[in-house]
Amino acid sequence: ALMRLEEFGTGTVFPHEHIFPEPQQDRLSLMLNCRANLSAIFSFFADPSCEIDRLMEKSRLIYEFEDVEGIKHSLSAIRDQKTVNLICQIMQDKKIFIADGHHRYFTALKLRDRLKRDSSSYVMMYFLNTESSPVTILPVHRLIGGLRSDEFHKLIEGVKRFFYLERLGRASEKKKEDDLKRRMLFKVKSTKNTIFGMYCREEGYSLLIPKDGVSFPKKVNSAILDDLVRGILGKNELEKGREIDFTTDVNLAIDKVRKGKFQIAFFLAPVSVEQIKNVALAGEKMPPKSTYFYPKLISGLIMRDLEDAV
Image 1 (cartoon, rainbow, N blue to C red):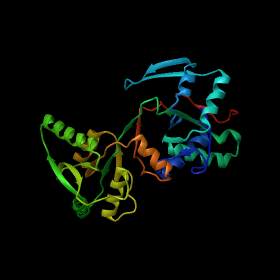
Image 2: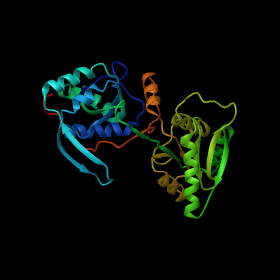
Image 3: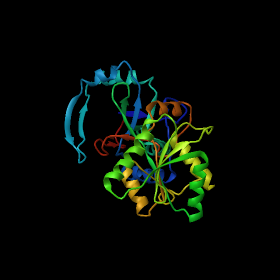
Image 4: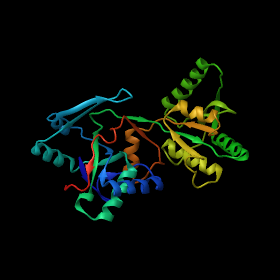
C-alpha cells in the first residue's frame, strides 16, 4: 500500500535504528533517476482483533512462485474499493514501526522535500500484523578488524574488565568445530542475561559473561557491544567495511576471521519485537544493523511509478 510520509516523532511512524549517511545519497540518486519506488519498505503493526486479516481474505491471487532459497511467495490484490477504504480506516490509528527500510524512508522524505509534488508525499510500504503473523528476527553479528597489534590486545583486555571469558576452545576436526559453535550459539540465544559469543584465532571460541556487579546503561545487546568496543578503543565511530562489518551468517564471520580479513567476531542474540517497540516508542534508536527481519519481500515484486497520480 501507499502511506503518507511524515517526519519521525510527529505522528505514528517509528524508526528503531540509526542509519549510515552513504546509502541515503545512493538511494536518493536512484529514486531521482528512476522516479520509482523499486522496493517496498517493511513495517509492522499490532491488530489484535485481526480485522484487516479477515478483510484480506477477499484478495485475489495474481501469481505465486518459489525463489532460489526455496521460499514460497504469493502475490494477491484487493480490487474492491469499499474493502480498501475500510482497511485504510482501520489503519488510521495504528502505530507503524519500520522493520527494514530506514534508509529508504529517509530518502523518501528528502525526495518529497525536493520534488514538492503530491505523488512524492507517499511511499510504498508493506505492513505485517505481528498479532497474527510470526516474524523471524535474526541476530546481526559484528566483525572487528583493522586493528594494530596493541589495539587488538587493548580490546581483548578491555573486554576482560567487564566479562568473564569462558573459553570453549578450538578444534581442527569439523565435527568438534560444529559442536563448539552450537554450544556457543545456544548459550548466547538461550540466556536472559547479556552474554556474547566471541571468536578469534588467539582465543578460539569463548563466551563473554558479565562480571558480578557489572551493569550496562543500555538494554539492547547491539548497543551494549558497539558502545563497549568504541569506548575501549577510544573511537567515536568505526569505519564500515574495514574496522567493523556485519553479517547474519555465523560461518561466514568465522571464515573471515580465519582468513585474516577481520580479527574478532562477536556473536549476538536476536532482539525481540517488544524490544524494538519499546526502543522506538521511547524515541531512542539502536545502532545500525541491529536487526534482520526474515524473510523479506523480494525487491521489484511490486514497483510504483512516481509519475503516476496517487
